[in-house]
Image 1 (cartoon, one colour):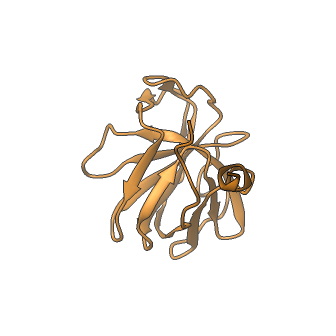
Image 2 (tube, one colour):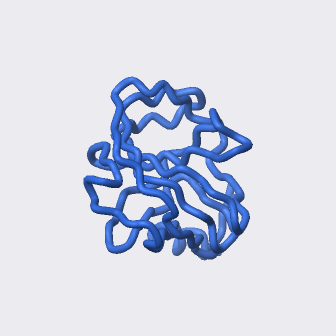
Image 3 (cartoon, one colour):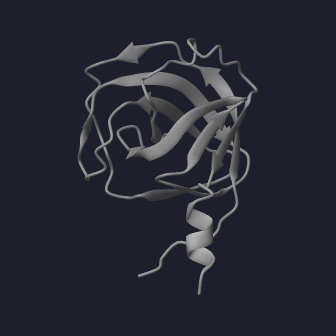
Length: 142
């Protein structure tokens, strides 16, 4: 069954850089593969080398990248590419809601957990959530 079609890219701006990593974080992957985000909301960006997308999967190995303010409302989906400045961070693995409604933890699948400091991230850098191009042609076929 077809469910997802083309969508707009989501823009954001980095408002705080985080500098730490953990191997025992204990986050849990939400069952939802997508989340709507509103302009002005602030969410945390976290890299991980975990790949399991089953609801409730425990996420321990993480690198904290920073907090980003959404500038273009829309839908962030599992599999969206994540860019900060010129850095391709990885793809959205899913969401952890342990701090919600304050913010979501947006978990980003990367080769290795990396912190914002390790990438030399800076406040005001552009953040982009981009639908993977390979998904779009499949969805447009009729």
